[in-house]
Image (cartoon, rainbow, N blue to C red; front, side, top):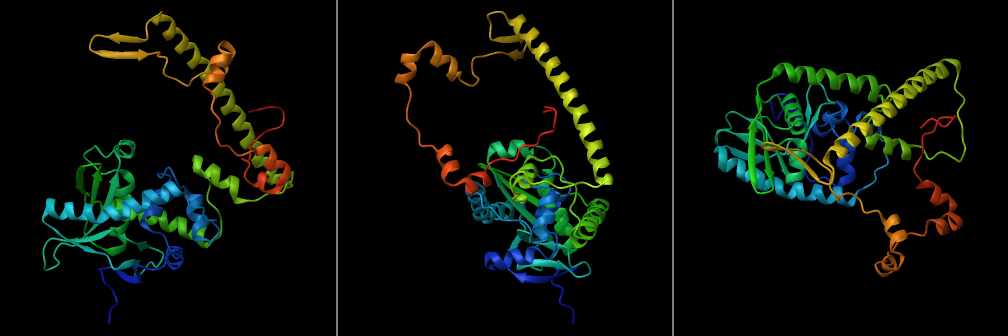
Length: 349
């Protein structure tokens, strides 16, 4: 007797598991929220994050702001699902838990909801529910004719795991409700499965870390990944040295190109500023060309030098960590929380 609960998936774990157990289940494969990170399309996580997480090597550091946003999103899922049901007339049901592809057990899915055309469970589809502020919605491009890439990739991945023929993305952007039915793109789904399968086989199972990529979040991750001792070193063999020299040479080229571009940018902006004279805004018929207003960062140092008495009047005491005292009394703890700085001998930035 088949244990499938969708055309291609079985139930791996029920919903409502304690967090530790749920994290253990997630490490057994790739879920929908991992796909965009693997493909380099997630600003908060990259392939290296996913690799370390699945290998159980990622030290979890909870961020209060992100946790609060996650709780908000989870609580609003039900409201988004209700709006979707009202708008489309479809039936929406909770998912039973973590689903696992029958033939590829590393393919996992936790869709927000399952949707049907009627009470006879016709036309099943996965439903991804999101809630966004207008700022995050603008950054993710929720205003177009197609759903944003991240939620769309999740929904397509859930189709791949479940075998369902349809997927929907619904979003609550402040007070505005939007929803999309994803195109029936089986070629994209097949390509997605191939790319993720390669990642799982070539990196997670093989124990070979992927290229770190250029995300700022990955830079932070690398900074806390290894708690290196002071002035510790690793001796590279000739092959490793050759590869490092090639990267350092290209880095020097990029730094030089960046400096040249920064000089050119400064020269262009100075010419534009000079054309303004004592005005702040440059206009063309029916549109604004550019502006140079006094709305940037306040120059505290120049203000103190120009108006020392007034500066003292407007100076307030703020609570701040005494870094010098911490370094003197708790040097190891102080060092652990210092940022790691990348430098090349010779003064190259």
